[in-house]
Length: 343
Image (cartoon, rainbow, N blue to C red):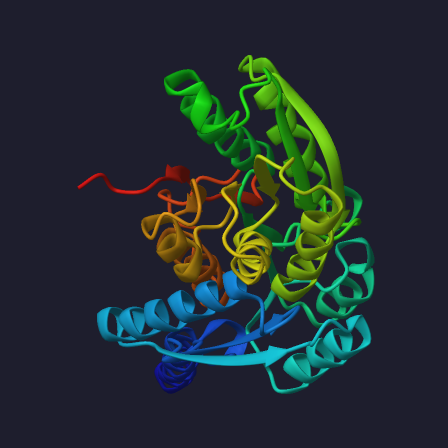
């Protein structure tokens, strides 16, 4: 009897020992997940030659290096240029997923056509951080692992309009050159389908009206955010409306710089130019007196938000409280007016 009891105790001890070993190695015999020492982030840019996007890319690379040094976690950024092709971008997303990227950061070519990329990411279970070009709300609401980082287009436009409003109130003659009581402007617009272009156009002009600036539109045109297209339009307008244009309201800095190129070719006629984005060349033009002003988003914080969201999702960690998300998925970067520093 004692021998049987001893054998039962021995068997029980063996079983308990095995259970303890299993618990230490992971539940139900599964190994404990090792702490990740690296994250792989696939980044697709709608067009690598866009000045603003290049600024964000540079900031993102710098912040990835700083994150590595601080956390000890290696950040592998795989950055690709879609060159304005949605099909190319779709293929880049497939490649990122096949390579085992932990998260995707996508600057969509066509904000209205993000569904294919979302489908592939959802199937693979790979979170997505969109930036700069906001997918439609219906797409963003399809999955709780979709995020967006950008700037509030209405805020950009209101700040841009206020550059002219404040200057007009301070010195009307510096805006209304011919003193006829009307501020005659031309408008350079971005892509016709881009939400920021549509909103910037509407609210920059509305802000001028609300601010009491007596505006009169001469003409406008779509230059697709591009310097060369804006330059061609401005050259045409200078010939068609000689001496009539007072301010040029541009949806972004690159197009404003294109207008400056045309002005300089024509002999430097006095015209006020106002941009948005505060790109490096845009800010240089403001400080050189070639642009009246521009609107700056905090590009460092913008890129940091992209990186922080990506790292949190890649490491399966909570999103930091210093990244305020509207509706749990939208981050809006702060903005401010940039004007020439008075000496």
